[in-house]
Amino acid sequence: MIEASCEFSRAITRLPARSIVDGLRAENTGDPDYEQMLRDHAHYVATLQQAGALVTELPALEAFPDSVFVEDVALCLPDIAVLMRPGAASRAGEIAQMAPVLHDRYAQVLEIGAPGHIEGGDILTTPGEILVGRSGRTDSAGIAQLAEIVEPRGYRLREVLTPPGVLHFKTDCSLLDAETILATPRLHASGCFEGYRVIHTADNEEAAANSIRYNDLVLMPAGFPLTRDRLLEAGYQVREINNCECAKLDGGMSCLSLRF
Ligand code: CIR
Image (tube, rainbow, N blue to C red):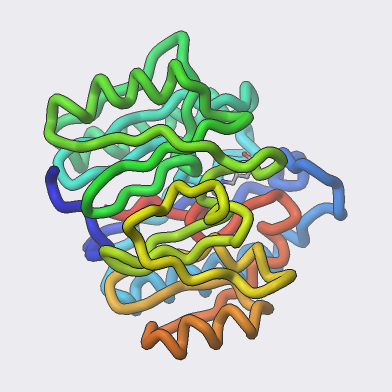
């Protein structure tokens, strides 16, 4: 399999739109504060840059409230990009907005067509395999279509399950290095990480699982001190970013960028 790891040079992000207040959410805990979200977003982008990323910040798309969560619309591998087919109908139009951006950066851009659905938040790429969680947004047909694209190119894909009630597979896990995963105990209990070293999020800190490793830095949501200390003790360099506004829309560190 082609090595896909935590070493990246580029990232794509999109400015939040004011329409973010109409974004999807499993539970209504109030609308996000747009100005605070902009500040958090700027901190996120600056931290990616500090980690060595050349960041392309795309303009806000008012017609698509959830478009700040760019991760869901594509899978960026070292040699190809694959445009997804979101399970959320309100997000389908985001694909056409991302397509030209990826065509400018990749020689090969493929696309998941009907009938399947798949969102990038359900995909965890490790150096050895691509794990894809079936979820409310990602179905077996979409996963099989992605397998048809990536397997002939030398990638191994494994279908796993996103826990019930959890938006995306990566809501509950992140890759910390080639063999280490940060995961919630509930996801780890499903048995999908055999062969990996797993660091658990602390009790009541499940939301810390959606972190990202970008080169030497781990970007994690602020407010989860016990999990942060576990990462520090394990030797990772951690940067905490306020995520309270995105969290109101079930979004986190991974959702906010495409990394390649
Ligand atoms: C949605 O429900 O689609 C957005 N409100 C949140 C998407 C978060 N994306 C992710 O976990 N990769």
